[in-house]
Length: 193
Image (cartoon, rainbow, N blue to C red; front, top):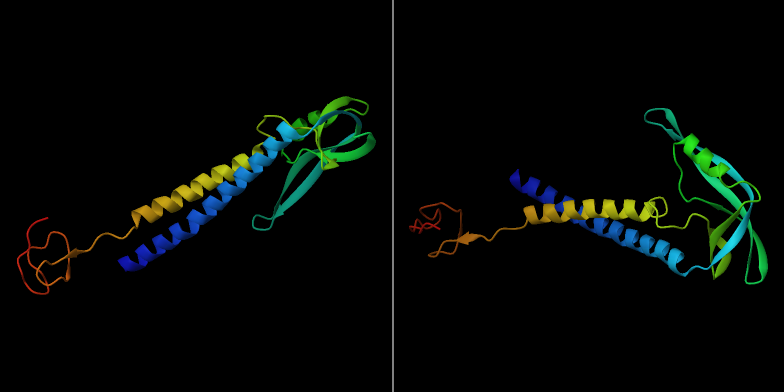
């Protein structure tokens, strides 16, 4: 029975470790992507064409309940590389706070001018909330945190269930358990260790 528990523990460690490392890797990639946007994408002044509050409903079949979440979508008009673009963009996240998202949507009134960042390889790819904020780095932080937890648990479990060095009888070479005074195979006296 103890062997089954050890095998199950090792299996959990073997599963959790690569999942955690994968989440850490994807979180790192995502953080690098956000940093690249902040550091290397050009900025341009854009004019708000429209802004709206978006509403999403998620249904949980287990509890048979609905959860509301809200986002903000803003359409900008701007010029990049001598060409005019009209492009919609969203925050990249939603919130359950209707009032908070409503205030944010209202802060992007039509006609307002805002600095936006655009992808030099595809000027239709824009970010209007690019900043060193929790919201902008939310996904990398969540993935990285989950990666640390999963990898830490996996590695901890693997260390806890690592194989121990078998003690052997010096006379016959058969396995013995710590604390035995005589070998169960050949009855040779054992020195305390």
